[in-house]
Image 1 (tube, rainbow, N blue to C red):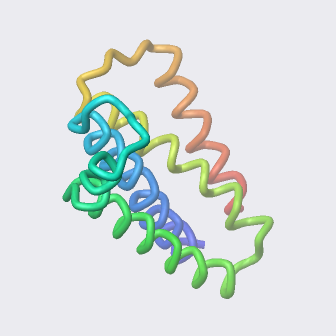
Image 2: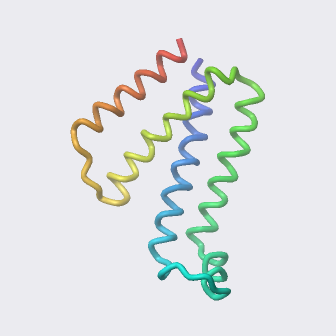
Amino acid sequence: MWKIFGLVSLQTFFLAGGQVLLKLGLEKLGKFEWSWAYFKSVATDWWLLACGVSFGLATVLWFFILKKFPFSQAYPLTSLSFVFGMIAAWLVFGESIPFSRWIGLILVVSGCFLILK
């Protein structure tokens, strides 16, 4: 039980981390345009490259999880990415999180533990 929880937690951490890196990278880019210069700046942006690495790590770890654990247990646990995403919104982007969302987060984590039982 704890092995799958730890692995999925790590996988969803990389997944949410990739989303955070993607947002940070996109915020630094200028206005979107269909030009070679724009796409060259996208391809050479360190934030976006780190995003790709994070997504790649999440994907490889997901391969392992799917191979070793039941899908009906592993897939619902990916909702843990909501936990990491909301914490990142609060810590990295300084967003204000209403109390009702914290309650929702507690419910998501509680649901994950019920899935593991």
